[in-house]
Image (tube, rainbow, N blue to C red):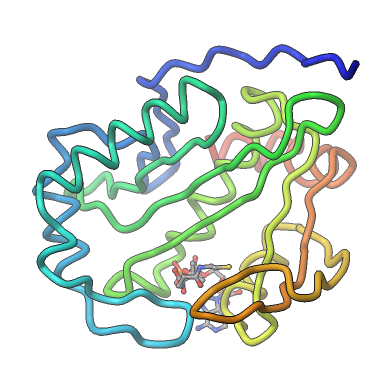
Length: 208
Ligand SMILES: CC(C)(COP(=O)(O)OP(=O)(O)OC[C@H]1O[C@@H](n2cnc3c(N)ncnc32)[C@H](O)[C@@H]1OP(=O)(O)O)[C@@H](O)C(=O)NCCC(=O)NCCS
């Protein structure tokens, strides 16, 4: 039988600080910030952008339910969802997540990111995602991160390459979305890349 490798019990009070951002799990008192920031987006700007949600998707009940789900997933080591907040005014500008695939002899996770469209091109995705990588390897003790991206999503592909992920393969008919199966390009970050790119003391000082 495959042995379950123990995972660290990471507190929900976790906060990652970068130069301009605080990255942490959402709490109930973030509701107004979250709903207003999401709600002031423009309609979807491309095929990968959800854009401004309908009002009915921004209710306190929905938010509360999602926090309960996030917290349960965090405690169970299934999925780590973190909001991205600006230090200068507290504004919530997006979300990062790590979804654990397996904790036996694989120790890998899917790496996800989303920035609300009013805050694109300010470097927030790069700054926040860069700080999540040491968290994933050193605190969550993960061994490999994967990001699956549609080939048309140029912004996301440029971002993932800038973060040091390497293209590995295309997975055909991998994801069912909008009533069809789509292909995804997979980019990976391995311990070798982590050690070369993220253990550099200059990068570490800047990012966490
Ligand atoms: C992809 C996304 C996260 C980028 O967020 P962002 O905060 O605007 O990105 P940053 O400002 O941090 O940019 C970092 C890098 O991403 C790339 N990038 C971002 N937007 C880009 C664009 N429109 N075109 C090309 N490259 C882009 C660039 O390499 C950029 O580095 P540079 O500024 O040195 O050129 C954002 O567009 C988004 O949330 N899109 C919708 C959701 C999505 O696609 N999620 C990923 C699903 S796989």
